[in-house]
Image (cartoon, rainbow, N blue to C red):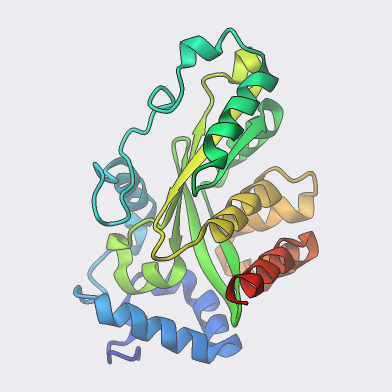
Length: 265
């Protein structure tokens, strides 16, 4: 049972993530317990009332109705490119100039942003249609925290696994990546920016998750993308340690840990 006394096994999401949660318990029992205690403090709904089969649908509905600036993280509904950039004006500029404008605009803001080459986004997008979700590992000082990334249209919503575990379909997104393909054909670039819940993530942690999307969905290595396929289509064969191994091999894990250490010094 969880620290609040409810058996986690009653949660319908437990079946899907059972192996990952058991592994987390085994590898970092203290982290698991402390995270569960933290979630139980804020949890009002009893676990076990939602339907596991509705996971994808409820994630998509949550994405669509994510809010007109609420205190629950303050995400924007229908965040259009026009609301950020004068699209007609930039059509006269080169891809390089647009990239500079985008980077300059967001460099002063506390958020994640990128300019993605059209071919790379094509590959990510094609794969996202076949494999709309994946389990990402965020290095923490004491281990790893897992996040489920779920595509909804061109938005990619991240929710921590422990939040899904304890709150089911009411678990809010903690990070949303917005991709804008409006200039893809004409300029060969896709613009990306994000909103995040700063109670859960700081910018370099959100950046680590965004980098992992490229690592897993835009990879040339079939072994790496195979992890995404396995998670979506053969979940019983999925090994969360393979995600950690890829992350460490890429250097993203080490970079983030170094950043976390310097933050605290």
